[in-house]
Image (cartoon, rainbow, N blue to C red; front, side, top):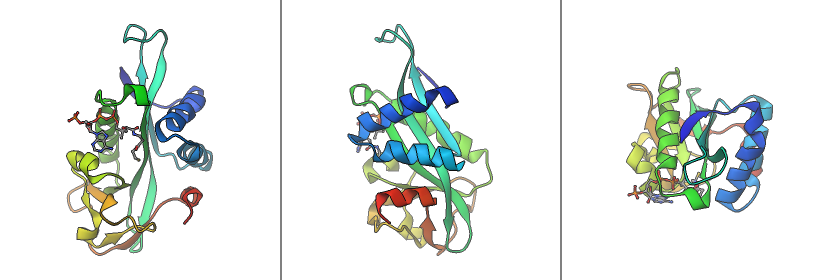
Length: 173
Ligand SMILES: CC(C)(COP(=O)(O)OP(=O)(O)OC[C@H]1O[C@@H](n2cnc3c(N)ncnc32)[C@H](O)[C@@H]1OP(=O)(O)O)[C@@H](O)C(=O)NCCC(=O)NCCS
């Protein structure tokens, strides 16, 4: 298994991974739109190789980070989507994608990463309820809206609403 940055040749496979993981095309469409808009800032794939129980090289997981901006103008990343092929889940692939992705985020200047997702899953990577920092999302995510600090002091206090890229309007806000 290797984790690497996506290449142009991966687009169809990334689409397939997201459709398989989410059971529909929305997240796959989001990735394609972010890429077309130049806002797929970090996009990593997990590639399994022949010998690892499958016959040919295959993309089995994907993670993406795109820009977000809070009301106070502070900039961070939005983690979305994160997907692992159903038949390959619970083997650490999602965690590997997450660890590498967060490492790349920390090499940049943005202060924080937000995510809308299951607190029991994202909590293990250090994400905590964003509301504790006075941050809200546009979707009414409640406790599912979480934040992780990338740089010391990187999470703005009381910065208001964190807005994802316009491509997220696909989800109805
Ligand atoms: C969420 C997802 C990416 C996790 O990928 P994965 O490769 O299965 O994750 P890992 O194997 O690294 O799992 C790490 C741990 O999290 C747990 N976990 C996995 N999904 C979880 C969930 N939805 N809620 C809580 N815990 C979860 C696993 O049991 C595992 O725990 P363990 O190490 O104690 O066994 C994958 O299940 C997936 O693609 N789900 C469908 C799409 C989705 O919901 N994406 C996230 C929303 S953006």
